[in-house]
Amino acid sequence: MGFHGLVRATEDLDVFIRATPENVERLKRAFRAAYGGDPNVDEISATDLLGEYPAVRYYPPSGDLYFDVMTRLGEVASFDTVAAETKDGSRRGPSARSTVRTPRLSGGTSI
Image 1 (cartoon, one colour):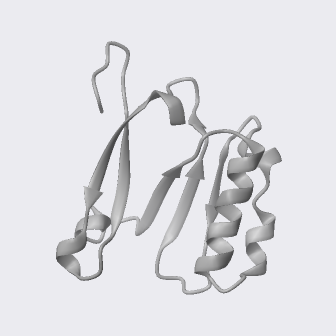
Image 2: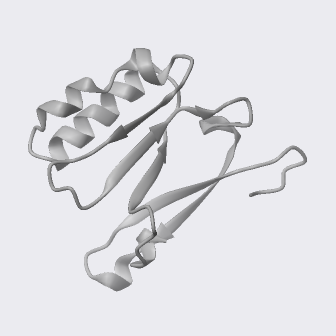
């Protein structure tokens, strides 16, 4: 919804990443680049995202959007088991592309 300019009640963005230490580091580099080297990014750890409860919430310094980062949702969904769709947001000014992933239930049905 946020991609289309509609504010969601939670005002957060759910981000699914593939569960590898390298991807956690890529995510941290992206957050540092986007939020001016925010030192709080260092609190995001591969140990957390690859562990028993694989989710963290990142609050950037701007405070206008929060990120819930996950590597899986229990045994139901992981990065590799969600359907993907690429959206083009160029109608809203500078070109912006985003890949949107939706978890699939058994049998291939998206939720």
